[in-house]
Length: 322
Image (cartoon, rainbow, N blue to C red; front, side, top):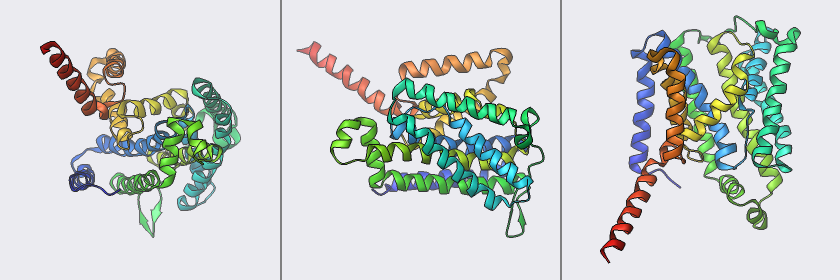
């Protein structure tokens, strides 16, 4: 499947806008834009697990924490970022395989509870193993990497690194979804029994959906640690796992660009609602509830929802005219 001309032009314009936007932003705006890209990477991985494979996961922030702590600990020990980051991704991939095993026996909300428990175990590990993770005091002064002697310590230089990693991650996922693997994941989501009858290895694809999703969280964590320069257990709790799930659902679960839109809303909308002070979270939550009522398929389902409503209205008018 190839991109249409309009789709390709829109994609190139969006990439050009992302390349130019940082030059017009102040420090905090650039930080938010970089954090948005990091969240996109994490949400892309969760969208594979939840949206395309149809599995439930509430451990995504925990996987991101594993990636962040791995990079932070390794760099503090003198290991280069370019070795620490692949190590973090590999560890998250293996943990994803392990947490995928409960998915072979339990489904739906039972699987959600199992992954939630795993996230809680990770938080307890981050908090209590002070000799390794620093406990509640965290790990400070995490340096940003160098690339062939070129320092990426500046906010703008690091942003472009994150942008490149985001584009590569998205391209790899797009290639995966357009391959036979992508069709197998969709078959697993739609009807596991029918998928197995057509030769899809349910065990392998279930495990791989968790493993690849966790690896994407590991990529996000590996970038998050040097972005904020300090990590502690708080950003990797269950609340953020729910936030990642919200990003996928709000944008459009099972839609490739859903995490891009969903992460922008989940991250940036609360910032624009801060004028409401103590009420901004209530307003944000109410807006999400309304959207789930009227657009259960996410914001990217707006066009199809309007078309369906128009078809129903036309059918009623035709029936009334007869």
